Length: 121
Image (tube, rainbow, N blue to C red; front, side, top):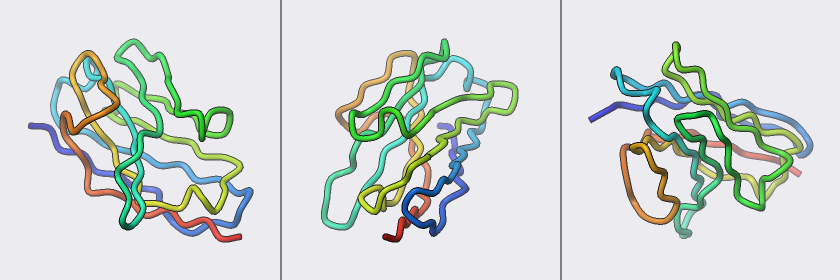
């Protein structure tokens, strides 16, 4: 069981930027697909992006062109650069670690504790 610790959330004005990070314990990080999800009160957790172990990024349509996911294997860390933020991006953002193949829909792998992102209009 890996442990994930997110950081970087906060309050930002619309149009601004934030960078989230997720540090992952253990020695298997480089072989894992990593993802980000978000959740607002009363709603289901929503897929945001993921990156394969080979470094290929994938995005939800709602964030494509504004968010960038990346990974630093020597640092066991995955990042989510969020630009051109909108009020509807406000949510708790969760980091997710899966195995070699990333499954978007469902509750797979390990999760971080979440970090709040608030975008004011």
